[in-house]
Image (cartoon, rainbow, N blue to C red):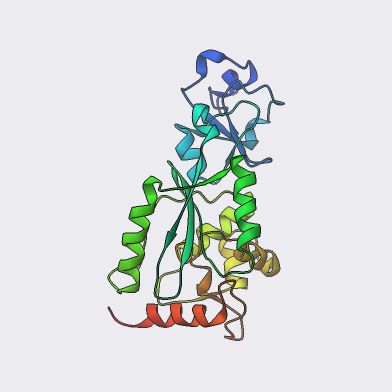
Length: 244
């Protein structure tokens, strides 16, 4: 085995059941994560990321494989849905025991599509009820709107393609009280010149406010579109500009 090759790759190649629970693999070409012995076609080593837990893989943006079921028994009841009241309107929050998968205003036209996308990604029905991150989310959003906090620590599950995840990470790096453009966002995500693709990834963000897509404006300074409504985008930016 080449010295540069991760020694765990041998477990993947030979589908060793003895490695089950020792680590999980994320496949960058399919955006799924698996057990080491997954019967699917063995990925090339450069297309793998290794994780110490399913939670780490989910929080990195990979969705669970439907063949080897890396979530184990939890895969049958993953998603729960609750509501959060904010000064800008009610929001729906969907998550699992591992974190938050969706946060969106209930009157957003794309909510139904985004909700179905989450259900498909997790291959799970969405059941009403609380989940561990919900109370933390409620508390942190209350602090945000009261101008007591500008960042969030709620665990997120940003499932998406590698480029989408890169865009969302770039969004998380934009400080409150500032804005960026689609051009800069594309460059920060590693694809200079791909402003339109960055705009699509920005629009596909399913974690409103927490992943601050409202901080992206046009290169001419125009607010541009916002799924929750331009009036909300303006209100969020104004809130973040005010001194605490």
